[in-house]
Length: 112
Image (cartoon, one colour):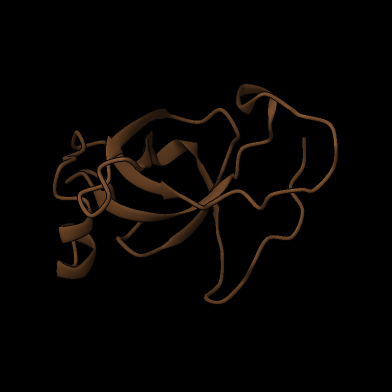
């Protein structure tokens, strides 16, 4: 079910049959003098599906999706091209995905 371009990106993670692997969108930085710890910052609630388990029926690889802020299990893997950087992925069930974004649609503000 995976497309070759995206499966190469994520070949190190294979989801269980009822799970999807999601590449979380990058958070947009805010300028200011207040330093907020990473754990207290709002996390992006949008991303791209990079792999799906065999039991997933409504979500496809490449879909841009919306999910809850505390959805799923997040893991970080070292970036193959830059070992000092980390790529973060989310593993979530299909039930935790709350919607789809149309192609080219960008979220400018997210709820708390």
